[in-house]
Every structure is written in structure tokens, then in C-alpha cells.
Image 1 (tube, one colour):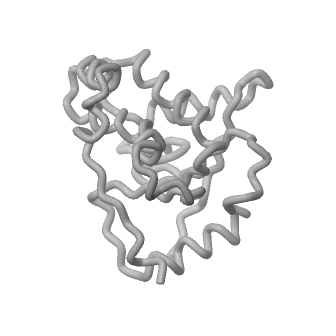
Image 2 (cartoon, helix red, strand yellow):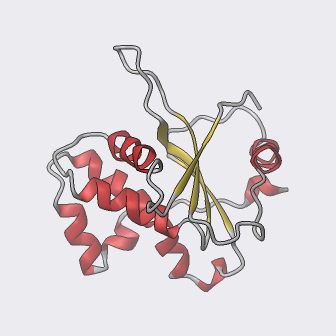
Length: 170
């Protein structure tokens, strides 16, 4: 059963590395310290040999409420978006759900609270997302950095593919 394979992480686990702590300390808005932490998620997996066999990582913010079996959701997403541990051809890719609408009625390209990563192929995308947040430390939303990633995909020299997944009732 896939529902019992969860790891709960806290930023202090990576903040012990001096360079990561310096990154977190740059942000004036406290919540952004935790948002940039998400871009280090694969670094955490590198620190513990028990995760050596993990190839696909599903990230859910701690405030996500789940009403159905996660295994059904994950299997459906893997099928619909052709996500697997072995078929990524090393193309830097992240899978993110379509963004939420704001009060003005416009949508962000993606939301940063739920995403799927390939252990090797997603590292470049996470680095691009982190760099975008670090270059704009006054912002209060990681969605703005994600929107910049989407905008950059139009240029051939950009090295990350962000796949938008539609919201699914599973």
C-alpha cells in the first residue's frame, strides 16, 4: 500500500548547511524562508541512504487536506502524465498543478504546494525556481517565481520543462 510511505521534513534539517541558512536568512517575509526550502527537497533525500531507491518524489505542503487514497491519485497522475522512474530521458522536468485564481480573477501558471519531481531530472528546475526566488527576496509569493519559470520556457536556451497538471477529483 503506497499510503504509508511518507516523510515529513522541516527546514531545520537542511538549514544546518551554512549556505542554506544564508539563503533562508535573506528573506524579509518569514513564510518565504519555508517556500525556498521546498526547492531543496531533493537535497534532503541525498542526505539519507534509505532514500537511494526513491526515483519519483511527490511533494505536498503540510496544509494540504486529502480526502481519498493518495495511492489512487498518484497512480492516476503517473498514468495521465507518463510519470515514471525510468522514462525521463534526463529532460529537466517538474510537474505542478494549475495555479489558483487571485482576487482579480487571473490565474498563476502553477501552485507551489503540490508537485511531482524526478529524483535526477528535476534538479535543474528546482535550482531555477530557487534562483528566481533568491533574486527577488522582497516578494511574498513563490508563485511569482513559478510564473517566471513558465515565461522562460518560451526560450530555447531555458533548461527546464514545467508541466501543468489539471486538478483532478481523484
